[in-house]
Amino acid sequence: MVRAIGVDPGSRFTGFGIVEGDGFRLKYIHHGTIRLPASRPFAERLKMIFEQLGAAIGSYEPQCMAVEEVFFAKNVKSALSLGQARGAVLLAGICAGLSIHEYSALAVKQAVAGYGRAPKEQVGAMVQRLFRIDSEIEPNAADALAIAVCHLNTYSSKNRWKLPDGK
Image 1: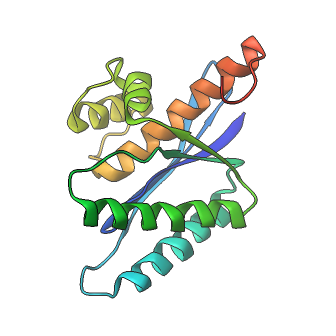
Image 2: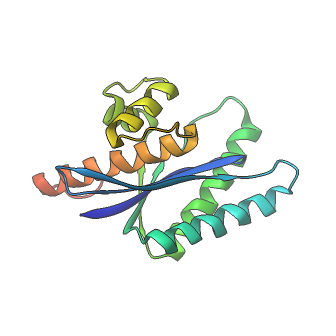
């Protein structure tokens, strides 16, 4: 079983989800949301992402990290903030010695909902059903669990077909 942490970075909320998989079954481990107060300076929020995600990595010991690829946004300021939050996430993973894997939003939604343009609510509902979680999952954490599932499915398929990374 491979243990992966999926992360949905954001400048206000960063979701994370930890899942184990072997190509045939998936096992839910944990999920959470790092809440970043808008009242705090942006640099402090980046530090919070780095530290809290590092603590989760230390507690749950994933072997790899999966993150959603950068998307193109209409609002340049939001895109820059998201990019910086992603940087804090990637740095936390790299500092912990994790391999980093990136997936498009389309691939993540396809892996969990079977449709690459599924709405956020459908992805959340599918994650709840997949892991039989009764309580509602915060959307950023649900997305993070979906990212971890996408990676584990992709990873196991590549291993089964003996494909190199990036193919």
